[in-house]
Length: 162
Image (cartoon, rainbow, N blue to C red; front, side):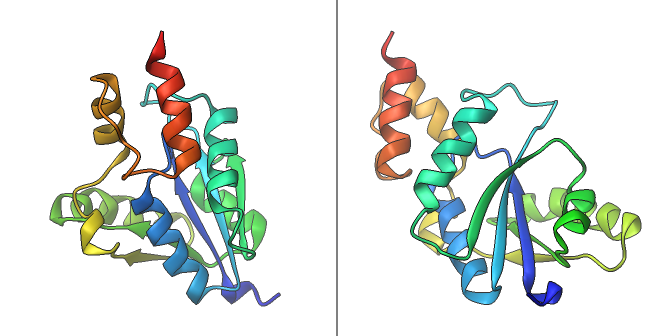
């Protein structure tokens, strides 16, 4: 496989949302292989542990043959090198996302100038959606099924049932 046609899409995915999936579908249409990297962010306390996040992403994306969900405890650039990817995909919903992502992209370019960050815009119906909003709605007993895949919605219900 041509390494120029491999991308990674890293994220915490706590949980994976329809917005994430929209960006992944767009990346899968461009690249022959996309690794969805369930990253461990030491600054984030997560609702789902890393096994659950990986499994929910795998189940949610199983219909995309050129997408593989993996877990990583290393720097994003190091993971990209490891799998031969030359692109890091990031979803941008608003200017506020861009400011943060721009800093990360510049640092990744400093670490490895051969790995490029590509910003993809999700469908406009997902511009307000993020995992934090989904978790907050669920915490207050609201139905989140229109924002996440069915399997994720069911797992969230179980988390807040007790």
